[in-house]
Image 1: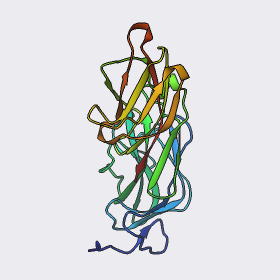
Image 2: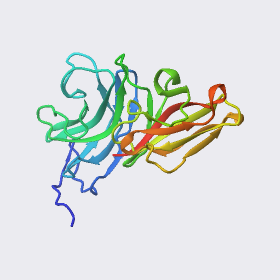
Image 3: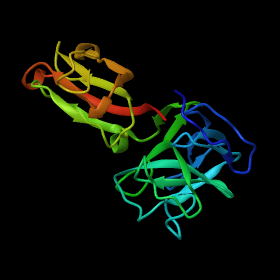
Image 4: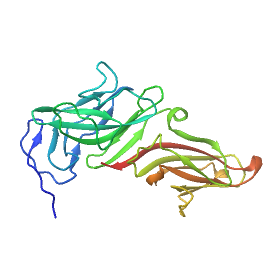
Length: 256
């Protein structure tokens, strides 16, 4: 049974009746460590009630004076080590705008704004600088690729060994809605030993990548990350002959 919809759209355009969950455009672009833009596009709001239409480019700023409001943070002050949802917002008689919020599902909307739709995420580091990224995709499926110095922002393991097996938490590199992680693995040291990597945790029976150190092997690809937002690895060998794994999170995918 289809959900009833109210006709209409925000931003002064003609009426649309887009399918439920529809989104086109609204692509995020990293501008600098404080600003991102939301590109032109159209989407259903979070309740599938109306369309929100953006005919230009919206710049959303995390700092400045005032700190909160339209095209800024929804409430509070900027925090480091924090994921911020990026929303496009609309309301009758209001120009389409953007908003940062720590909430993906219930941002605090400025006065007069009644509808929103999350169109992505940005990660704010401990120094209050955004993680550099490129978002791609024109529908609800979006990919985010990182453009950062590895040992500063994307590396989650460096020459690590654990022949008992260990889970690696990547939640500072993967937002809550990510369903797939893009990893780069590199194995070093050891002799003829290997390192096995699995998605999720120790409960996963699938070896996604098996790297042999004598071949200086590397793996670049996607793995499901699910609710754990990480991966499991186990190295083989002992002492100086034990293999060692370096791992980087290169990006992620999600469905808006």
